[in-house]
Image 1: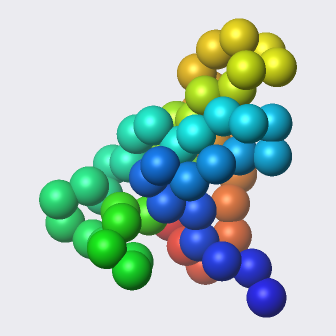
Image 2: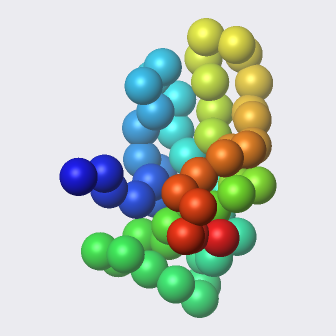
Image 3: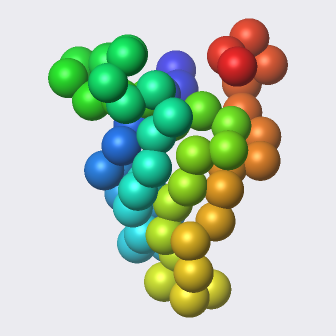
Length: 59
């Protein structure tokens, strides 16, 4: 089972989710969920990058 990625969650490279368009309107277990276009940091590639894909039923 996969779980939704939320604001502040760690990435596999050691980065963190840093922006969520749904902040202030939606929460899952007290944290806003990340959706397409939200951003996470990546220490391996030295930057902040947008999510470009996700689960097809979650927009």
